[in-house]
Amino acid sequence: MTTPKSKSHSTPHRPSQGGIDFRNRVKRDKQKPDTAAPKTPAPARAGNALGRPCIILKTDRDKSLLRRHPWIFSGAVECIDGAPASGDTVPVRDADGKFLAWVAYSADSQITARVWSWNEKDVIDAAFFRSRIANALAARHTLGLERVSNGMRIIHGESDGLPGLIVDQYGDVLVMQLGSAGPEHWRETIADILQELCAPVCIYERSDSDGRELEGLPKRCGVVRGTLPDKVEVTENGIRFAVDVAAGQKTGFYLDQRDNRAFTGTLATDRDVLNCFCYTGGFSLYALRGGAKSVLSIDSSQEALQLAQANVELNGLDSSKAEWQCADVFEALRKLRDQNRKFDLIVLDPPKFAPTAAFAEKASRAYKDINLLGFKLLRPGGLLFTYSCSGGISDDLFQKIIAGAALDAGVDAQIVKKLHAAADHPVLLSFPEGAYLKGLVLRVAG
Image (tube, rainbow, N blue to C red):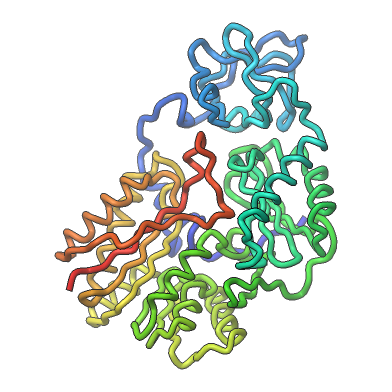
């Protein structure tokens, strides 16, 4: 086991920017019992200790499962028969004893179980996982994503029928992230199947997300199969990016923004561009290749900025048009405002301020503040690309926040385009939580 290096706090899917943890400054909202976890998991009443392991739901608490939502929260559980261990596969039954699903049980999480299968005849074994993984790979191949990039998400958790499992591909290296007790239990089996079906030179584990602690699991990083190359690189739409799979953010790169980066590049010609929370320069490189007059990139991680500059050199782009600033983005934007700096295109891709709806109120203020500053820094006719990767901020709420920021900034803005994650991040219709990334392209009226 290796200990992950300390991380920057300035890019999406991270605790917060500039060391400010907005999650600790909010009060939890009241939430519906079938769709939101309680503060602490209420222990389920013990069932038949000598019976076969099984989860029995309370009366009328099966509605979300009947809609095929793949999570069962502790408040919906009447009792647990037997003595299952975390990660064990057990059946879930309604109050009348009717079979509902096969699930992975978690003793410590507020989410007591996650669904593997709705079919009572299924056997959750190595063959089951091989079939699910093969289906996920086939889906990406059908979409032709390998023609665009050799980096993609090949398994996207619940939306690929494998809750808690994330696998990202960077060339011939796979990065595996186990976020819950179910895939943790099947860790070696999953690694063997990935090795068989994908033949990577290395499978590297990045099970270091905060969610592991909520599952009662220790964080873990390191090589699972093969040998990690000294350099890992991904090519996306002809642009090369060095990827730090061992210590970089998320699993090393932000694959979900692939299409949005490309779209930004098409609109950057002859514009002064500002890229906030730039990480390793994804949007910046596309803007430079797209013919931007200048690109100012800001991030609070010096290590990320160094890799971003290396990526500029790797692609032979004009470094004289690129300016890099290591700073707290909120403070940096206020200084730019005070200096009366103006830009034609601004990218705001901030961290996850609201992981759940419970954090939405105070997180909304952070999103409003940063977008208010963004609007003030735009020239008339300028474009604002603004994103939220917070699961607790809905599309409607995000649009309302941005509308409020525009009003306070005294500008009229139009939505030019709505943006979401790339196609290798599918969203199961019965699991809307999978649509975490949302973006708006706004044009400020001239």
